[in-house]
Image (cartoon, rainbow, N blue to C red; front, side, top):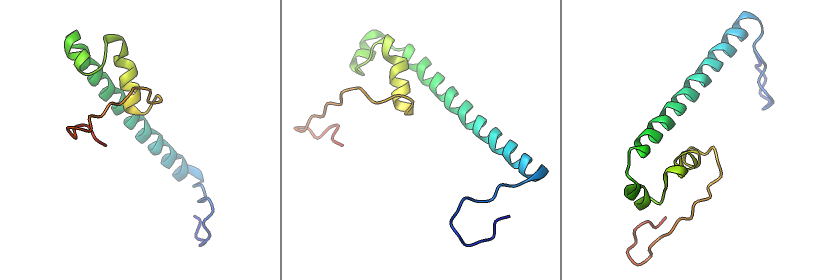
Length: 93
């Protein structure tokens, strides 16, 4: 165990304790990744149920659903134009 007061990288755990810690950390990461995938699948399913007019009101088409989800999750660069109506104050950042 690293007990120094220096702000270097922490010492890695060795042996069975370290292996167990890495395994638990990996499983935790997999759980988070799985939850994110399920959340994206639910969003995709909900958006796919909308009719073309409702999607158009949201500024989307069926072909853009996956792209929108990737942008919302941070998995892709944001490329959509954001339009704000300063007169009504709606949508202001």
